[in-house]
Length: 237
Image (cartoon, rainbow, N blue to C red; front, side, top):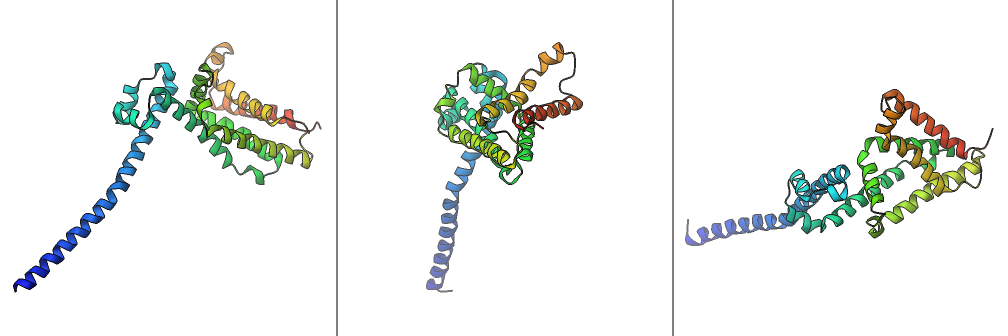
């Protein structure tokens, strides 16, 4: 092999190395982005557990960092201070339930069936997501000062009211619901009959001398909730 041939081989090898390096460099920003997103997700999940257990005042950033396998510097870098992190956790909790409600596809159901499905969904969501209830309780202690800073929760909440309003209007057209039911008041009542039972299950179990969380008790309660809400809105027989 002559000098020119050897030089050609070196050039080809250099070209391959450059291409490989270029691909690696191109991939690094994407990997860094994925790593950052994964870290943020772990921090939010850990913070949700910590805030729901201990509230804003009792929550510890050290505990969140340890649970998320992160460090405090990363938490402050991504989310600011503890109050900011609490606000974001709270905001995500509200957006999660509002997004799940929109996926119920209620607009294609008869009004009565749609409302029953919505009431049952609310009950089941509270059962499966106890952190949501405790986060809401905690924010009420702070008079909603964190929620008021959110720019995303308001529009999501208005979509919920609009969804229930549409169900009520459809029910009036179908002749099954009475006219004049306030969708905001109905939303509050649906939340209340589902929410109160679960938030007071420990004191209720003692005061009423019954197991509030047995399978039979839960089935009895959702049946009662459905009957209560439907009596509020249905045309009298």
